Length: 427
Image (cartoon, rainbow, N blue to C red; front, side, top):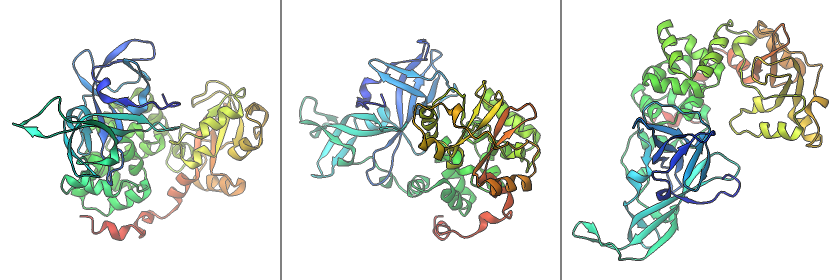
């Protein structure tokens, strides 16, 4: 669907069967979940409400939808079966948007929403509600006079009546104000809010957004926010965090709380975090992420560039790829070498990565201390470094931002930024 990006009207998705990659039905679509945005910007489609055969309704993120085809939705097969709970900034498309009375911006005329369409953005995983199908007409005796009035399809920006600024004050408007901030800037804002308002904003953020922000907050704020979330959601947020950041945060919790949250996480995510928690703080093993870009030597430069383009990767992780023997996931087979993305840009796309890798760059041992790690970055002008064990397997990669985070003074986040003054007036 991402290539041609066809438009799909949501009424056609109601009750549609949802299948896993093997063709087994897992449930049916009961609604769609969208997040409204200010200034008449198209809402972001977050996911689907899927009803399982057990009648339980769960949330399926759009990032786990691989296809929306005629009469069916295809998923990655990875489902979180916790019961769906709607959050303050979320709107149910079928339940709350359809049959709503809104106004045409150009004429001020009231119309009724009959349907809305969704479309996947080109070359991205994001989806938006882009068009609105409406009927002109008037109310009569409390019910719409069916069969009367012209119907038309207009852009989302052509109607008024859906927007956050029309729904009162509170966390929703505050969240909309900060929507475009980078995670580090939003973290700085949250740090300066009152605990009550901080909890309100955190509760309204998506799991992915909250995970990004938590990674930029001081430990005290991280613990406070995580402690105010329901345990199931706290586990979901930890799954979205980089494993090294999740390990650092869990390491600050009491043993009982830590084990309870790890038990609620997906087994694979929990295993990565447990592995990192086994290393001492301020060592390469304790600082590394277990999710660098790993390729086999017979992969092509085109394959490598496709992985580097992943928008979910930080710039430091996207700066280079690591070539290893199978298995591809850490801990890998034998580590063979590294390729910086600049080298990837200089060679033809069909070139095998095994023929252009830098074999001279030795990896750090997982027990390497912070001064040794910092010296590695300074010596080789790198922004990420491989971590390799005694057997030659790649365990992960340390990025320069993690090194700086541990070398700066403990109170470095307290420095005033250009947004800090604004945050003091946000309560």
